[in-house]
Length: 314
Image 1 (cartoon, rainbow, N blue to C red):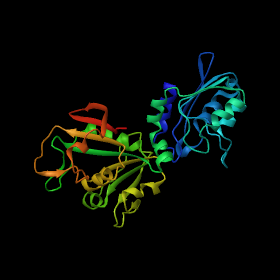
Image 2: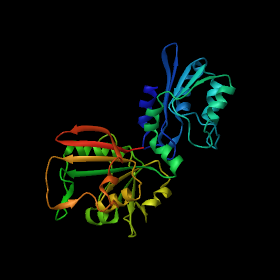
Image 3: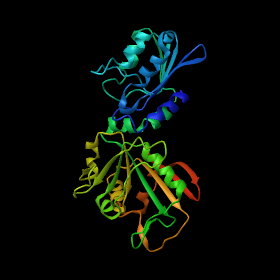
Image 4: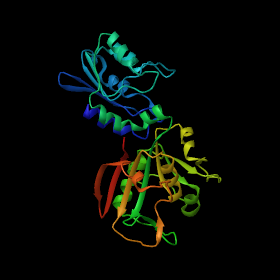
């Protein structure tokens, strides 16, 4: 299952509204099929792995990171149907599909076909991998990551607005990898006017995927951009993941409305003093209310800079 989860990572940010799923088929201790959700969402991971395995899939063990879909579409049969026809001995599922069109029906369909099914294997890891899809299914909006690159004293620019560059090459490269793993990137209208950001992926080998560019505000957006009026309008974007890159007013607005699921804080070992703070007012009135909201998920050095990743506490 760990290997299947690794395969699923290959599709993150590229599968449209579909979840990025990984699938591995094993028979006689040998991998005979591998698959992950392809760009745009089709073919699904199971279909890709079954195509590789062919007739050898009969009697095999299938490992898949999300319950096989049970609903048919104009683009072909469901993955549960494909598996039932292929006849593996067992299907191991990491996580139940939150999509109500499946939501347990895939497992029921497999069992009805005489296939043994094991569920909840590495479910926590699968939930993290599929956080965008799960958030959209359960909350009707994308999973939101707020990225902030600041000095040690929380400044994102000099007092005159100069901000290139706060962090170094390695940290910026890491942030571009994160861009390549997201469906859309959002900044405020003020940032668009002041910085004319490209918001593109500029890493060799990853340039084929460019996330949608979203502007928050009432002003007209540049060509190729989409506009939403309020943070709550992210529900209209119909995507799984959204990366919010600023500025301070936009970041504060998303935090104030409780729409941030993950924080990525890049800190450079510099002090700016009288600069531009990374956040505006987020609506707190008591210090005690600030505690217990975030838990550390990851921390690492990126060259001379430091990255800390936090997720919203339950």
